[in-house]
Image: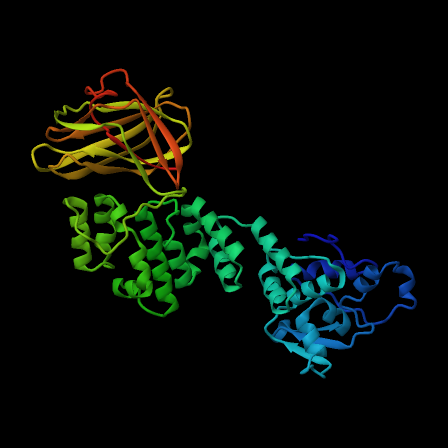
Length: 470
């Protein structure tokens, strides 16, 4: 596969048969055979300096140095010209003309792939870039080794164009290894946008621990924490194999090290935690107990794991409250409390703040939904529960995934609670303006949801808070 420069074939003016051989070298196939017999008056047919230099690529004619490239059966002896190499690379210039210049007619390069070295020479002789999926990483390594930034840039551009969720983790590891921060950032952004697919790719289990930590530290991963935990355990199992250890819970925890602290267990539902991490054996008994207490009691005890939400969005979590006063009491009979709203800009709703019991500490069962009003489509929902402490504060209830909200479209927020009488809000506002340096101005407008809505309206009722990202 060719990119940039002349496409396909050998250098301009090469003898018959050279084109096919040159074309295969760039894709990792057998290298082109060097020209041995000089053609009389070959210069006459080369009308430009570029043509004449391109003819000298991998050519024994006038060559004054040979490189022994690669190892074992794949090793190749490649002719070159010191002058051409020195004017294209400061490393070659120092090698041939510096204070400790080599006097040998042969230079051994066991750490370089022959196909990548030929790609480097082709570029130095003709400005032609020939790279493909099989050779791009070794060519990038060679371009960096010999300080040829233009070829390095071409390799990075090729990788950017071919970046996908399937190869994002593999390329992230290589980008960090080769100190390519721009490519690494693009890999991370691809992982953010396609987290589930990227974690399912083969390259994920092959990353090193430092790269795993870099990924787990991100607030922008688009995946539920329970699924992230499953993927991280899979990585730990492969790491145990690499270390020739049995994949016991103790060894998996040891393999993860501080990466385990980067799993945000408090973001899981109690059901997700109980059916997965709590039974994995990777967490200590003390950690399991503290997390169960975090899920079930208020005020929540401190845990050793982060609880800030992850979301493939920008900005920090924001909350608006549509009521100015709290009263009691509000009863429940299985009917949903509902309120309609419209926003002025694109946001993602991640949960509601709901009122708790007027009778002291209590547990509630709750179903929350967001429905597109006109179509009746349920865009997000969660059957869950929450514990309250008897105060008139609100209590967070989160959706399983962020719900995308488009500007100037009507949505209906629904909450169906099962539990004792609760507090409720009064002096409701039709328009709530939220403004912050990180997210700018977001305007919510609330209207009455027609039908049976358990009495909730703009002025009074439930669903006091909407929690969102911009």
